[in-house]
Each structure stands twice: as structure tokens, then as C-alpha cells.
Length: 191
Image (cartoon, rainbow, N blue to C red; front, side, top):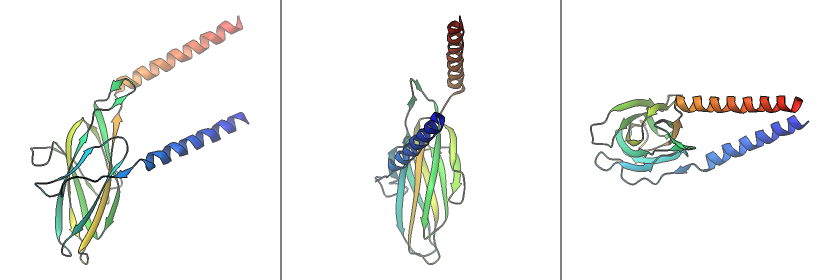
């Protein structure tokens, strides 16, 4: 009976954590216009999702290109700073837009950057690993629908630290020591 109660308690705690993570997500009021010489600036992208929501006006079927600068900060887990990160792009919402593609580049727009990955709104998985802390930008492009003069898109960005193998080795070593200590304590009690 106690085991059933603990399971229920863990289930409730997990549900609360999931809901608070979603509740912390917010729409970013980004500076800029998204144009080539005045890109949106989303600032620092952390572990809580940041959502960029954009409304476009134009003629039906016209194409667009927009740019979004953002920063991946140096995060720390417990006491160790992490050196690589995963960037998740998700929650694509489209209205009146076709063929949305997003390129992720390092550095800021109008610099000599390197393309890390390219996503489309139809991609089921939108995650890039092994990114370092620093400046990045998104190159967002697509078309307004054939009968739409207004289009809307939104995308959520979230940065998560990727643990280094050394951290897992230290964790396993610590768990081994705890197990050894518990075994020794049990042996001493029997005497």
C-alpha cells in the first residue's frame, strides 16, 4: 500500500513539474523588424521556452525572409559549467503561410556564420546538439498562401545543457560508493 502511495505522489509531482515548465513559456517581444539590416533580437534563450510570434502582410503568394538573433548563455548544472547545448525548435504554428523553413547559423546576421542545420515546419524533430555558448541567428523564410495577404507564424526556442561523459562517470562512481556504504552498513548490523 505504501508503494502505491509513493507512486501516486511521484506521478502528481511529475505532473506539477510539467505544468510549471509550460506555464513559464512566454512570447518574446523582440526588438527589430526581422529585416536583413534590422533583425529581431530575442536576447538570451534559456531552459524555459521563448516563443517568437510574427504577423506578416503582403500580396498572396509572395515570399519573405526574416532574421532572428539570439544568444545561448553559459549554463551550469550543479557545480560544473556545461560546454555543449541542444537547441530545440518547436511549437510551429502557421496561419496563411506555406513552406516555412528555418536555418540555424552561428554568429549574428550579416556576419560570416556557419549553417548548423535547416528545419521545415513539417519536420517532426527539430533539435540540434553540440552547440557552444555564444551568438546565433535564425534565417526564416517561406511564402504567403495563394489566397492570403496576412500570414502568421510562431516558433518556440529552448536551450538545454548536454551533459559531458565525465559527469555521467562521476555520477556512476558516486552511486557505486553509496551502494558500497549501504552494503557495509547492512553487514555491520548483522554482526
